[in-house]
Image 1: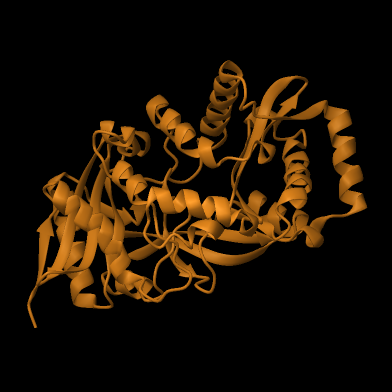
Image 2 (image 1 turned 120 degrees about the vertical axis):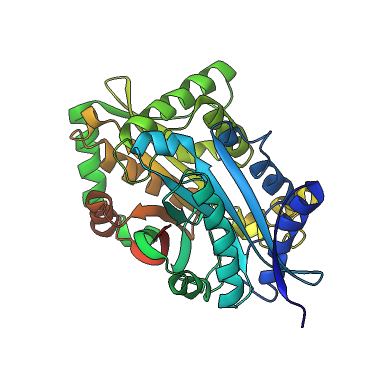
Length: 376
């Protein structure tokens, strides 16, 4: 058997090999949703992805003969280091055969580069940041991932554990069923809150270009303010935000993206997306043509949605705007997404959100995602 070698990705051919090698690790896995190759190219492009205006990326391949048996990326994020005044570096885009020796060799290559960049901790997986797909699935392997969430073989956590990585944070995914939380009592309660505190709900305007920009800018301001104290949170740059909006707009459903206003002023927002993974799981090639075809022909299978972000400005957190938005998303989603939805990721330390999802929405944790740290 040939020896396993670790090699730095140095050119476009290597980069495509890095991207397409992901298919090697999910053969026969009915729950894996293939990524779009063009989307991965953009995500990993240091010229097209604005994240790399303040960050660096190095990618490594583990090869045995002509076969790719693993891959990893090492990432520095200057905005994170400035925000938290630390020397944390990141690892991501990890894939590996079920071999601790191969995994250790990949980790060593990434860690060595991070150390050369002056970092004292390796954190991950993040792909490439906490504002993108992040964390390792450690529980809940029996169903496909929802849109913009991660998925990996069940043996990956052991590869991290055995390489000296330690849990630093768990995040939960809650499954929500319409029949579990709808009640006349909840309807009356949120109606009273709306009337008392002059709360109104308004969909983001996708049709008017100027108003759409105004609405999405308001969401960015609320997000950055509402999440400023959240663990690992780094504000979006203007360029990153604009890129995110442009990427999400084609798959967004305006019906489940809305602002909560108090006396006419933006106070909070909720962003949910149709779980297009229910159609994309059929796109085995990862091609744009295949994606378009499956989104067209498998549209009826997209009967589930994911609540990605909900935020309320600090000065409005006692108005009940959050309770109104919980009710609103449930009511709206029940009319178009009968299978229910997922709320994720929810920080294990976010007591208020975990309580609301458990007590108010009657949600149940069904997946757990983990971020690891390792001292370098």
